Amino acid sequence: MYEAMKMDDEVLGLPYRKSNWMMYYNKDLFDEKGVDYPSDDMTWSEFRELAKQMTSGEGEDKIYGAYLQQWPQTWYMSAVQQGASIIDKDLSPFKQALENRIQLEQDESIMSWAEQISTGAHYNAAFQKGTTALSIIGDWHVAQLRQAEADGDIAFDWDVVPIPHPENVEPNTSLALPVGLMMNKNSEHQDAAFTALQFFTGKEGAEMFAEDGYITGYIDDDVKEAYLGDGSQKPENLHYFLETKEYPEYPMLPGVKNIVVQQIYKQEGELALLGEQTADEAIKNIEERVQSEWASKSEE
Figure (cartoon, rainbow, N blue to C red):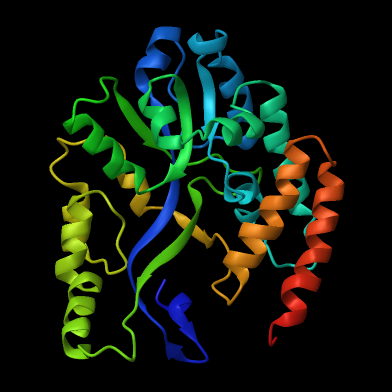
């Protein structure tokens, strides 16, 4: 995470957190159906079958087997889990990743991309409502669910397991990014800014964030102990977050997030999910656009 905050050997910021992904599940829904809780070693094809098994009902009474937020990462993650990068010249691993999302929609075990966009659906509300069995989202969701419990907004039991993985990829292989803090070189209060930066990205700040359920940039045994707590708070299997093998969601290079992810992958993936082009066409267009709209304008 620290190395990802460097450019040309200069440190641009420090990570106070890192975000990696996990699969959250509603234990009550599994108990009601008499279905075993999801395994910590589940392939994407097994996830698809489990999502179908947990789907039932229609309309407002529908229980969705799974929820995937309408972000490109939620469909391309299976390619990144194999070590592929979204700026590779050959993006063939991403074709299967996109097809996986399309198949889940065809099964009607997840809310369609079109419905998510039109209704403004959100992973937090969808899971807290109690009508979603499985939800794949980042570590920050732990703090959101704990707060919801404290506020009395959810009454069901829940836990986490690692996200599904492709065949021949080890279990608990996740995506992660550093969440960084920087200080402005033109600040009139550089000493104060640096003091704040030291606190939030050092041990004191890390212990504070860890107690609230966030994975931190700075980590040692004390921070791990603060993160795991005394076992009285959910989720029971919080330890999985500390055991992940991680690949970056995308390279920390200028323009990758706002051009490659938020424009190219989002736009072309959406067209495929709306049925306006095939997965093959989408990936071909992404390859071409990454080269023309980003790579050709970058220095290397």
